[in-house]
Length: 105
Image 1 (spheres, rainbow, N blue to C red):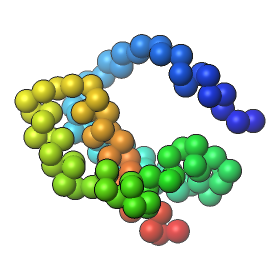
Image 2 (image 1 turned 180 degrees about the vertical axis):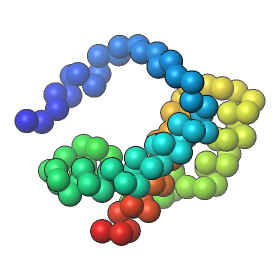
Image 3 (image 1 turned 135 degrees about the vertical axis):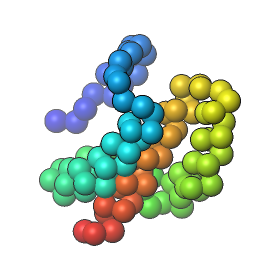
Image 4 (image 1 turned 90 degrees about the horizontal axis):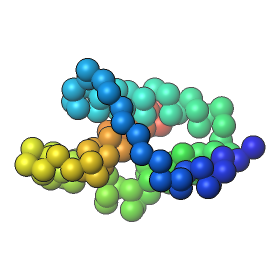
């Protein structure tokens, strides 16, 4: 069964409380992309595009998610801790890990 699109667009707000630093969380997301994402894609290939697979090795994905943009966003986060900047870093960490993990398949 495909995940209903309306559930992703509810606009629900959430708050995640943890003792992890941002750096530790980004490392966890990198590891998740590197080790778990390839297994999920192998087990459920029909869902890979729904899970963001197209951004991993596409031209657009490499322009948006790379070490230069990561460096720029890291500098901005030191000045402005905006949630969208942090979200970018989380997604970037996941994609960088997934790129490395998918090379091994």
